[in-house]
Image (tube, rainbow over the protein chains, first blue to last red):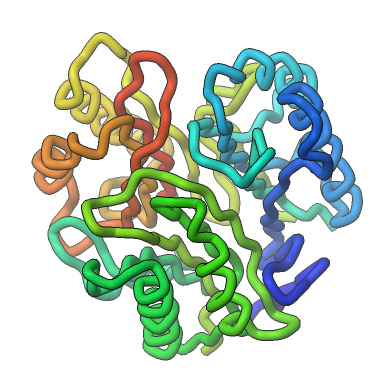
Length: 116
Length: 116
Length: 116
């Protein structure tokens, strides 16, 4: 069996799991008082931080599944997303509207390849 | 190509697929007449049964994506979830509200590493 | 690190990513003016085309996560799905209702093993 690596494991969940070179994790904004622009920006920053932490990069993203509490906010999402995604190395992406926790406007499920 | 193993394959879906050491499957409660506590308990029991069947364990869970028909039920979910998840080996978890089939209150998509 | 292969990469997303023998991609119908039968048929055809393009087949599907804009349309989905899925090689499947983009009635997230 290939090793399972867990980062930030609490009683409820792990922040990241890594197996067979692939890291998976879930991000919501640290500050739910922010509007959608603020929460998207924060989630993308948090993804960057996790990518650094696990020895990966934006160029190694495989998939991001995005849940928005209001799909009308997709323009605000895309504005920041398009600047954030590396040219020529975009992940696949699905984006749907779902009910999220109180104050949470965006939740992302991420998969990236660990480089080292 | 690495072998694909399928368990419980019907005309519509397989109960489990295994590839590259990773098993994936979807669980809903066997009894939709149960309330949310009952359905969550049943889904977690069914996950245990599948883990045994495939030669895995709660310690080898990678990811669980949870759909609740009513996110207000998250307290009832967490109460059972926190007792069920093994200390120090929690999977990553996303939990959102989505429309589920008639009577279905919770649906989970599970990934776990097969040990043997 | 195993190679990441990307197909149809734009500034926003890739059409397909392949890593460790597994291809992942997202499909929505090319023509949003179609009704649910039309959109489901088109999405399944598009999956077939991608399977051919990546050197895979319906027999190598691992998982399909289906988002319907109206879960009442599941009968129409299943009618075409059951004819489309290969006997004895069905993937795992989750199907929930979520808010989709304007005119979009069905969105699928697909994983399949690349054969060659």
